Image (cartoon, rainbow, N blue to C red; front, side):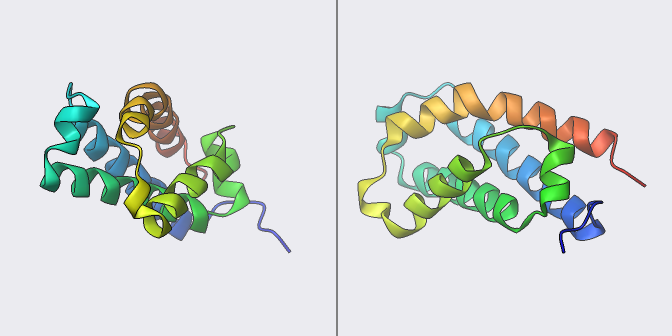
Length: 119
């Protein structure tokens, strides 16, 4: 039976997803996909951030996802799976687009969820 309220573990997962999303934005900065592709430590760090976001989201309860809001959760987990299992075909321009277009609203939602986390 699904839980109706998110747990303390869910809160920790939301915190981890938020930190990883913030880290991804900091790592990507204003760099282009080409600049990122040429920076092996930066590439690996960015991929790790997306892996952590996807894993945190994958292990969050439905109740926690509802607190955070309506996001394409399957897509977040799917990106993580692609990065982990098809790492030889990573599309860096896509990752940069995700950092610039998709992470800012996710960061806002995660932060808002933590500010109003159910007691």
